[in-house]
Image 1 (cartoon, rainbow, N blue to C red):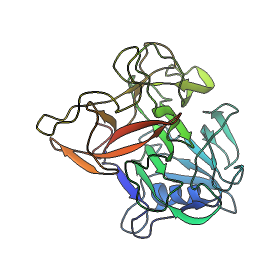
Image 2: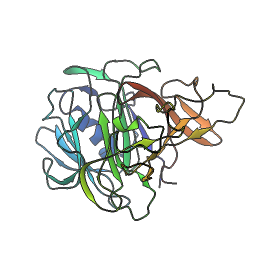
Image 3: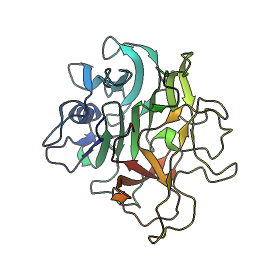
Length: 307
């Protein structure tokens, strides 16, 4: 497997995040499917799209992954800048699918904070099976660590604990960050947060089946990712860890979100979107909201997510 590809708003010929109904569809098509400028696509396909290009179905690589579908519906959004997102195990058009991930309540992802063509900064990091997307929907310049209000979306295959987990594909999105990325500090957590799977790893069906992201620390610890530990000391080894995804029940483990780590130090002196290298491994630092207005600090691996 290859390392993920980083796509950004400031790349040459990059698509524009804006307050128009087709904006998210355009960004995902350019990054995941066709590529742009000098950057290739991530290996996904756009299986279906409507005539106005504001409602589409994207599929990850079925040869290496589940081949499940992400539906992006800008046409049906309440506002032009808030497309709805859903996922299905299979789809027959951009509107019709079977075995949904979300229940009746769909998630939304903002590409702006108002209708219009003003460009917003964004970043998308993807391999052929999973991607992260963040859009700083209220600013027009490069974000800093103090500008952590970003709408987010994550979709695709996690790295499952069970090798026979045929349904290890997750969806999470929110106006404020990626909903599923606010982690519980206790292994006793159930499905409080919002990583949505179509089924349990055993194959038991359940639309809207929610799993939690769980980090260490024990009950009572700060559940916000990257907001605990001793202050960073550059003279010491860099210590990182990764949260797990549970099965929607206490003391269970389904797998790990691809490439998602966080520092065991707090605070850290890193800047927004800074590329860091520790012992030959590369990461990108992001300081953005998790669900509920909690500031999370992530390290996204820039090396192969599947090893």
